[in-house]
Image 1 (cartoon, rainbow, N blue to C red):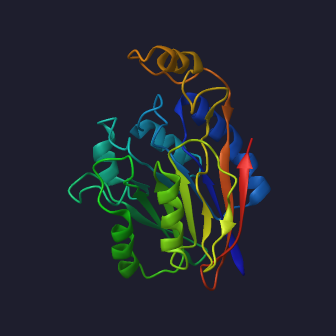
Image 2: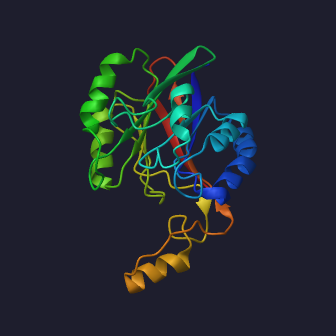
Length: 257
């Protein structure tokens, strides 16, 4: 085997996103034959957070790793689950005393893949410097097969982080904005990059939320309780080909269905 594939699906939003992912995963596996399957699940429980039940359901459907983000702790029952399950990870640059870890390892067919969840700082409070956090991990990780979910708001920070990690990670994929970008590429030193993978969630909607509620918020500036849209789910993700001998990316392909 000269190369292998990683399938990554973007932020799962509510039940429409979960239903779409669970329905489509078998077809995606048949089409792309990934060795590793990773999903971002931080919005999977009613649009905010994740529960142990949802995590168990994703793992039961052959998801290898679940990454999170700024809503990692919104469902309090997930905290003990994060400490007892190594392949669901929250941002590494949370305080070290917080539940869970930001790095995990998965092994298949002799390949050890390090999966990292790192959070941006721009427009987001409460996180340590992501560039320094990655540099510390870089010294710790022995395998050259490395996948990073960079959960951030600002496109500039995401692009800059991609170049910062270029040659030191197989892939850097952006999450959080729920809008898939068309800038997938292989960076000069061999890292696959995309600014945002997009979401797995209801369409039509406003980044997964009921469009009428969001329109009311923008039109009136009055406080509004957001709700996940009750619409069929769209799938957004990427498939990345990685060279076994070096961990360098060979190709990245967007998915939207």
